[in-house]
Length: 142
Image (cartoon, rainbow, N blue to C red; front, side):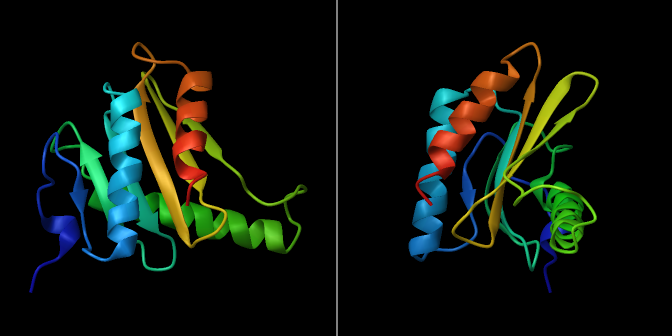
């Protein structure tokens, strides 16, 4: 039996977990992100309920999308639950931005599906406005 979170990710290659229409759409999104943000550290599309990575791209083995996705899927479920019970004021969650020491992480739930897109870049390589706009443009097709 293989466990995806124990496997080493493919480096500098778009990996898609399914060959159906969803997989083709996921590949298109990942390739579009990579074309506009070639300095991407990590990008992945994830199913929120299962935490399964639909498509991913990473530049280093220590940036494993199969490990990172579990944390953010849990964070999204908790945030959605808090919004549903109105513990946090506001409307639906459209995006989360996390600023680390030298990296920018953006988590964007996709409005018409149970997927979210995760993106990580270095501050030195791009800025928040550009990364957010590129992510919004490529995921609005879904």
